[in-house]
Image 1 (cartoon, one colour):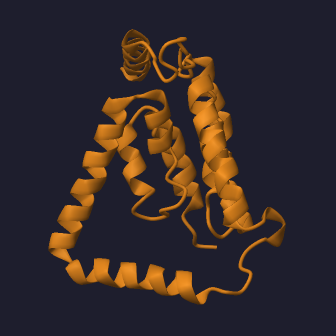
Image 2 (cartoon, rainbow, N blue to C red):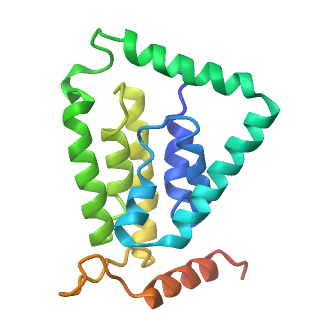
Length: 185
């Protein structure tokens, strides 16, 4: 149908290893940008900063090159949000008002438990207009499960004193393992 859900599913898989890839999401589909919430919940500041800097750089450069396009984009989104009073999309999924809290709870729980599969599911739930094409988010799950088998899903350690704490060493170990897996043999 010409939508971008398949590239978004690929971004979802690649985004665990390359956080900058997630810059694609807020620049195309704003609402399902769930990975920053994942990083915040896990206190993974480096990937969060990498994503934020990349996204900001794309926005700044593109706004400098074509400022009118950004104005048109914002105006289009504002107009669409105010004029779309009719039911749009697949009605059985329910409105975003009900799906959003579930999606946010799922991404935070998944981040704390190390459940990578929750990322595309939460992104699907947070997609404002649900069409069957949006199910392409779920195409990321088999590949993400492969990453889980490689150990990329360490749960956050919950200490009695600080509920959001996690060891920096475990992040570095995961990052080094991912780099070793990607290096040519």
